[in-house]
View (cartoon, rainbow, N blue to C red):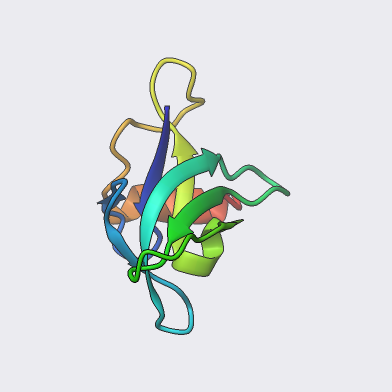
Length: 94
């Protein structure tokens, strides 16, 4: 299962939550599409608040880290919401 985590706060970002890009523009998270791995960015899909369709972008655009959780996840906990866990992800380039 893929999960979106806010890179600065470490809190989970759920489908339907409002997200803000690096320019301060608001959007709504529609889906989490690809996990971030070493050398490959994660992907998310968003839509604009005015109802216009969005598109698929890199997770970094919205300060999000896409991770995989569950039995198939590598060594990540299901809820990496502690700052030390987020720092561990950043140190590993995820």
